Image 1 (tube, rainbow, N blue to C red):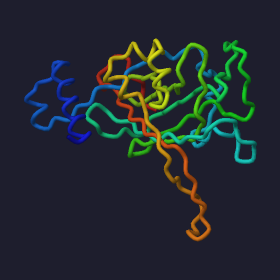
Image 2 (tube, helix red, strand yellow; image 1 turned 90 degrees about the vertical axis):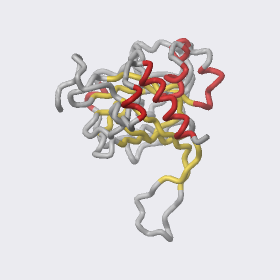
Image 3 (cartoon, one colour; image 1 turned 45 degrees about the vertical axis):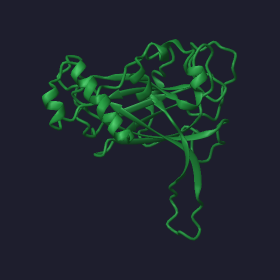
Length: 237
């Protein structure tokens, strides 16, 4: 059985359990459960992230001329959609994480892991009409007491704000020991756990003969926002 069929079967069960009509589901009604929310944590980078440029989505260095941060580089690609599976435009995607050593750039992080002066630690991205976003970063280190993860804050016009966390399939041993991760239902954990595989990424060079082919471990994170009739929906941008 295909993974798409399995996913559809799961969504059907989830929709029925949530009180949606089985008639609507079996007649092609598209419905996808919202991504599970999570604690913002104590290290949300205010006010620095508010100053971040939308187009600077490379966390591996502070600017194109600066040294590269320590750690294994990865590429995260994703999409923000509604429960009807349609992509959402003009959505702010904020991300923040620990460096390769497992330290946040925040005054409240008192652990003795070393800071990385060349790591950007956060980014702010705006989705287009296709709902897509992407950013280049490093595999986050293991913060004391947590499994490696990346924080997200999603702000969309007229929709509820979502704060969530993305986890790594490769860290299954640590994931199973993480209290925040294990509090999620199995289907929620599956939705926020991302696998990575090495893939070629694009280059700015237009000369195919000289274009260097770079490969990075690449993962895809699908983020589903809740309904527009939520009383806590954000205001239009």
